Length: 352
Ligand SMILES: [Zn+2]
Image 1 (tube, rainbow, N blue to C red):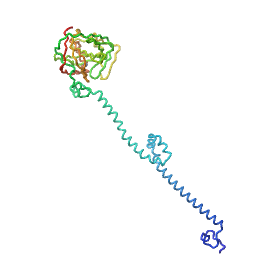
Image 2 (cartoon, rainbow, N blue to C red):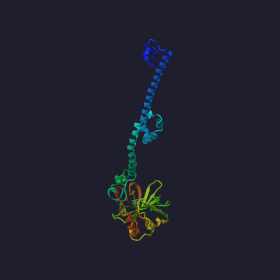
Image 3 (tube, rainbow, N blue to C red):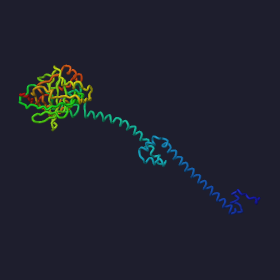
Image 4 (spheres, protein in one colour):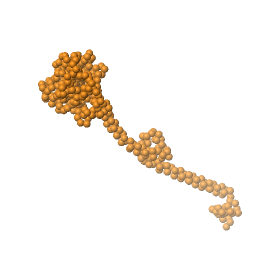
């Protein structure tokens, strides 16, 4: 029995009277070490696999979400490197999640901003004004700070022209040449921008003709009476000072000198027509005689700027009823009411 070795019994090996052979001992110790190291290896390997799986799992949502990924890429080039290291990508995800909500909030702001700016800009630079109602002449001065003079100015135009202070005024010298027709409907009147080269001379000073336009009925009144229309010829000198010549228009004889202009009125506001073939010659349109009323006034439209040298001619020019109606079809009424003369002097020329 004793000869029969119990190869597999540890008890026999350690507790038996006969010591185990050295080879047997080395083999046993070796096996234990192998089992230990293999076991340790398996444990470590499983654990690291578990970490790797965990890390992989956590980084998955990011990788599977092209929106956040694109945003991360869009936000900064650095986040592209983050993709190489899953553990680092876990942290940026919440901040990426916040980003779209920021964008969602800011998007409407961007949409609104241009609208606000647009309405603000148009309101600041060109407030709407008209000849009637809430934006009519009585309100002009309150529509915009730039229009203040319309209500607070003390030398405003037009005025009622009665007998003035008699004086032998130096006659206006007209140096008008024909011009091509640059016709503009500016929403308030028909305006013709005149070619350069025409001017007047008042008291030895030259004023270049810029444009002419019309009002119906007239703006100035003569002894309290309105005329059917009034023509304004606007000039400017080298210092930027304006001089306007006002000519009353009566309804009677047809005026052929206005034909080319009247036939080409732009019907819609903001539209302009340029007619290079058609010319208009204002020198032929001037009334006979050069007697005038003269006073210091203003623009008769906002911003109602003062310091304008006004010259209203005594003699009127004529248009036909049909011509008057054609203009009134576009502008039924575009005249500012008369303003107080105040402390100003109205000069009346005594000589032709
Ligand atoms: Zn005018």
